[in-house]
Amino acid sequence: IQVLMKESKHEHIKKQHTLLRLGAYLFRYKWLLLLAVVLTLASNTFALLGPMLSGYAIDAIQPGMGNVRFQEVFYYAAYMLLFFVSSSIFSYLLSILMIHISRQIAYSMRKDVFNKLTELPIGYFDTHQTGDILSRISYDIDTVNTSLSTDLVQISTSIITVIGALSMMLY
Image 1 (spheres, rainbow, N blue to C red):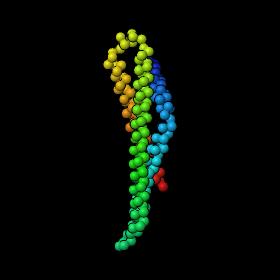
Image 2 (image 1 turned 180 degrees about the vertical axis):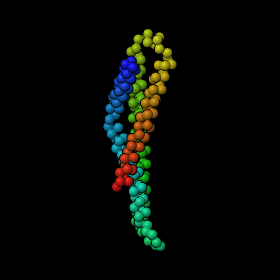
Image 3 (image 1 turned 120 degrees about the horizontal axis):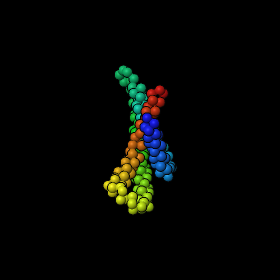
Image 4 (image 1 turned 45 degrees about the vertical axis):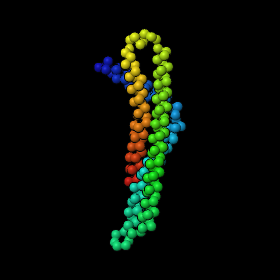
């Protein structure tokens, strides 16, 4: 049991070390990541305001014949269109920005791995299979690249959407 506990603790420390090293790569682009957070907030805010305006437009339609305030309905519909288009533009800019950041980070990682490989002694390559080394270089870095460009955006967008939707419903 003690051996399993030591292995578990070792794996936990190893994961923390990996996250800290990834954090160092992310920290190089802290201002672009801050811009990404701002774009995410703006995109989700505009996307969440659309349904609220839809409710106002529906409220302008009173029951009965001829009780529709068309000017008010069109007013809210125009703002809905503006907010949804703005949300789409911010979302598109966010995607471009995150792809740029993830490509830069992947490039830095590949460069660092290459520099590390050139420093290793020849004996290392005799004891490790070439396919394993190449797999780590290409597959693992591509996984980080994909995670940064898509998964990170989806997770943050989902969190903001849930919190925003809950806030709108309570309001």
